[in-house]
Length: 362
Image (cartoon, rainbow, N blue to C red; front, side, top):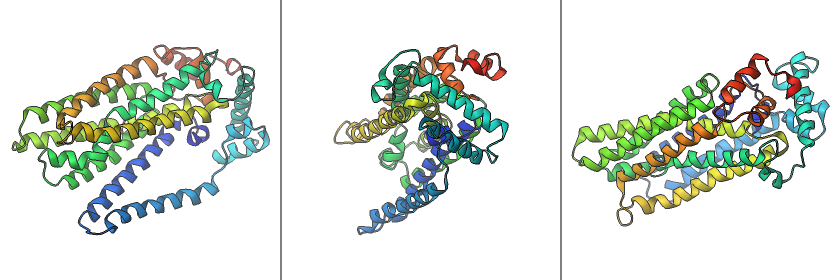
């Protein structure tokens, strides 16, 4: 949310996508740490990987002291003068710069308009009204749920066990490889977010993932573990599947939820959507062993039939529920959502960027 509110509209998608990039770097570091400590026959085998996490938490905590407050938050709290200073700092400019003045005036006008249509309570997140708060809230909650239902964390949480049970040699090393793919392929997603657009990236990503997942399921089901060519093909499709996720649903889900909500209830709605992400993360992490363990569901590679089917849901959701918001300010996105459907949003988006819809309308 902080990144969405502070980033310039022309690179907001790239900057918010960086959040996902550093998550993938963390997963890679964790995989390397786990591989390095797997043979330690003491408590250190898990204490070392856990302790390494404190380094990054310390860097984040220290760095936050040097970041300016969000201009939109300051406007919402009535500190317009400080909002000018913050916006100028974020844009490496001065408070009398024309662009800074235009940005703050647009934020103030949007906040005044929002104030006319209700308060800022949690109940407002679930009111339909002219600003479609309920719809926005549900889209954010379901978008984060669908991101988890792509099945991606099955690979990152249980990939080593899955590769081992599938007869693949050096499963720890393969897990590191999948994490490297995750890091590298997040970068194209960052760069394309403000070029292709959020909606198109989500649609392409879901389509690519479901094809890969069904392919993995079929290969793992009909081909024996002794077939090395099939095992290599399975690994290749797992990596391609991760590449599609890393360049689409990984960063795009956070980008969309960061710019989906009106300022007055943005923090509350972001909390709900993030809560949905972690709730489904926990639920799937808890349920997956019961699906694949040999003494329980014993689905093995067949579990990818499940993930492929959920990616069909991801595809339909992206087509019918996601607005195209690339290149717009957060205030323009409010207008876009209020005055278009996901299917017609591209036309309104183009009109806003072309200036066919004046700022007075926002």
